[in-house]
Length: 563
Image 1 (cartoon, rainbow, N blue to C red):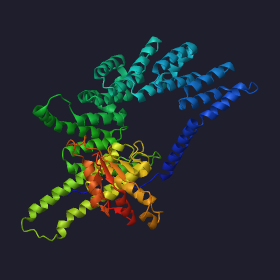
Image 2: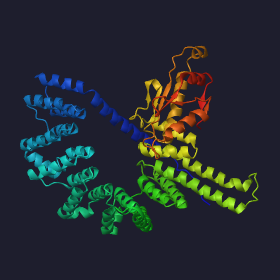
Image 3: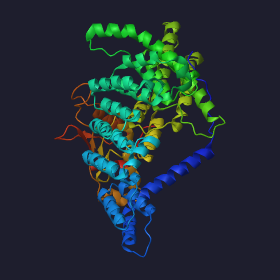
Image 4: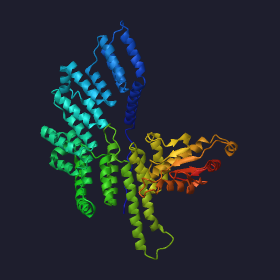
């Protein structure tokens, strides 16, 4: 019988957590103040630079350049450099590099690189020595290009380093490989990797470079090449030095297996043959991680492995792995280290466990019905209720984990909400959606428009859309609580509510929208009194809730029973 061990990790290190939150808030506030007050900082600097009776310090110049470049006020930063030079104060090399990065962030990579050439001429020996002693002077610029996914500019950086007689660092090639993978430039990526392996023999013991290589190869579906790297590594070295991120790339490549261009039955046969070997390799990698000194399995590790088990229908193994996750999380949080540990249970693993529990429940119910035979009593007895009781107990363990999981990946959060909705765990779905709203994760996509009387759902998944509608109507109900019944019954300015569901162009069955049907049933069958939505007369992707139906719903203290 399936069963999840019923224990929950104790919440510890609250004091440490509070300190970390305070530290984050302070740094965020500092950055915000720098961004918002650049005008004041610049004005103070200009006043000081004009006043010859006041001593202008190098730190004054560094401060104003830092504030201006963080706010992308590049021209103002250059103006500060010019004014400081007139007072005999030369801006540091680091400040000039910040200005280069600001140009790059504004999409002017060529100008940034030309400025680096000028800095090489101006600072000469310092430019070269900085590269030798503190890492490459180009590192901040490479970071900008990495975030932008700009492989061409990264390549230009390496070419310029060669031009200036500077040996390109491994980090420069790591950024190049990652940006090439993002741009899907597979052939150039493979050529670059061959060059790196030949030019830098130490690459096989450089964890960061191996990780970048594997990450890039996985991104372009070269999973077999990743497994070749895995097999080349010395087991003892990997045990002592390999990182969690590197092992995660090996695990992901093993799970995905060989990517072929075959179609139809040939592809299916090859995938079936490789499936068993893939899971064996994945199990071996997972075991290595558990035994390694520096590669501790994290939430990505567990979720990747768990989804492969789910794909193979190994439901009991999914639950066994979840128990291991709970044990790991308890051990991490009850350890002696003051370092705050990230939970290993995440949204995807919770979704997989909920699906596994229901699959095992279906199997248990089916077996019970077969054993009971045709003479099974119509009235359920105690033994027939046992599978349902166990399911509720096991689900309660999973649901108690939901408050700890990170929801900042909106795709993962949507998967969890959809799973909760599918299995009618509506209260938990609404709680997760509320967290998504409270933590401003969904604010990048405006969905409540026109004072709440237009609800745009067409980018949402089914479960998220239903939670959004319930939340929107709750908000409308709260906003009308201060309106008297007499006013509400007569001339309160209520509008028709437009709910944009889309016409179904992206549905599995073309032009058969899923959201429209789901929202219609929600507002009709689950609403008391019903809101009777109708299809817009000229736009089939829009539902209308008429203002008269809304007024009646508000008068009767209406509610949508999604709990």
